[in-house]
Image 1 (tube, rainbow, N blue to C red):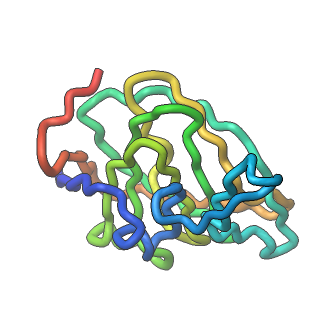
Image 2 (tube, rainbow, N blue to C red):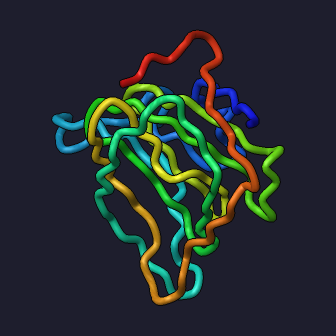
Length: 170
């Protein structure tokens, strides 16, 4: 079995795969007569290929048991896919660059509080990896008539490991 080290999620580290959706460092300004702060243009939503349109859904993720082992990845070749947790959620993301899947290019990120992710079109990723409890995510992705999900088996199992400390998850 191979291991995959979980890294902290930062804008710089995640840039090859899409956008980190977070308020820290985001462009913002007051609106509505100063009663609201707008955090502007947090992710590049890309859904128009082949007649697609943006859709908004909620995904309810079941908590994963630790240790986490992965053996497959998926991608959406016709559009981006954004995940924003609705509440305090501990979760991880596993990604690989767009193109032909190369398991040697897998990276795993431990997502901090208040962060979401937007996978760029064609980026390989693992399905939701939420911990602790049932967790809801607001998802913005592509709707349309064309199929938009490819799944690939990794040909082996990868175990996620935490970089700095043992992760104690129920």
